Image 1 (tube, rainbow, N blue to C red):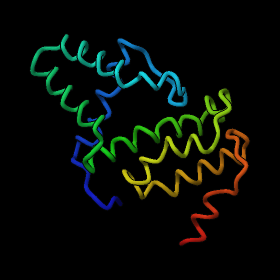
Image 2 (tube, helix red, strand yellow; image 1 turned 90 degrees about the vertical axis):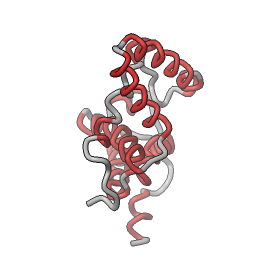
Image 3 (cartoon, rainbow, N blue to C red; image 1 turned 30 degrees about the vertical axis):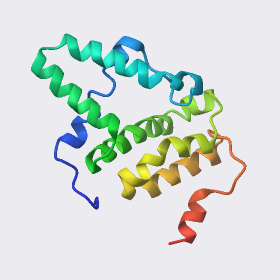
Length: 156
């Protein structure tokens, strides 16, 4: 299904330590521009604190996974990032637009947020485009442009 073979287990293990630093500094809504300005610094500080509380070997292992995930440079980390981005999309699909409607999020914001899926899991990209179009059609997302999957399918 995928053009590359993500490292077995690691592709799914990489996102696991990602939310751990949130225990110390809390979550930042992904569309909160101001909150995201300082997010990386707060996450790094929280990761240092959290992974330092663990037994040295386990803390180092998790820290390496977290650093690798944050760098996003390998095919496996790109795949893991794609899965990390798809999860909220699926949650919003199941709850009638959820936070997208509550915060009046626009298609352009969602597409920017989901961009890692196109390179990290390109086989899932047409599905993502369809879900985004469905959100627009249902009124969950604001948009003034033509449906992107129509443009995408025209190129096939």
